[in-house]
Length: 103
Image 1 (cartoon, rainbow, N blue to C red):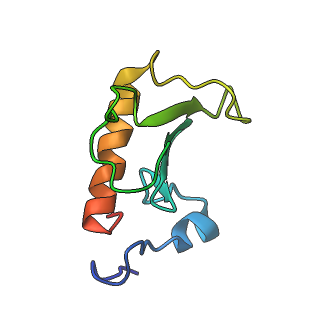
Image 2: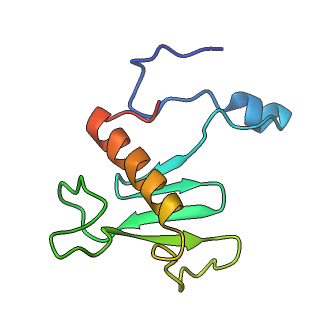
Image 3: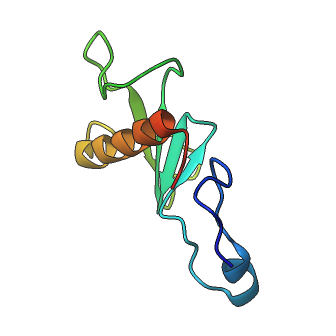
């Protein structure tokens, strides 16, 4: 079963994943427009309003990065140690926010 692209901001047919154990059609999951999860990585914006740049006005990273496979409690921010992942997820999240769609 396919869904039209305009069905909803976050429409994916999840029946194959539920019924057949197939991989999800999603590459990432966006949470409340403020966080994105891709694989073991979760990127979370520190401030919600209109953040477009990966750094804030003071030059600090705009978000935090966690490896949920190793840190389920989100205690160790890895954004400075893994800037390439933080930058990729930040860009993906901003693109979703701008388009108001996850696909």
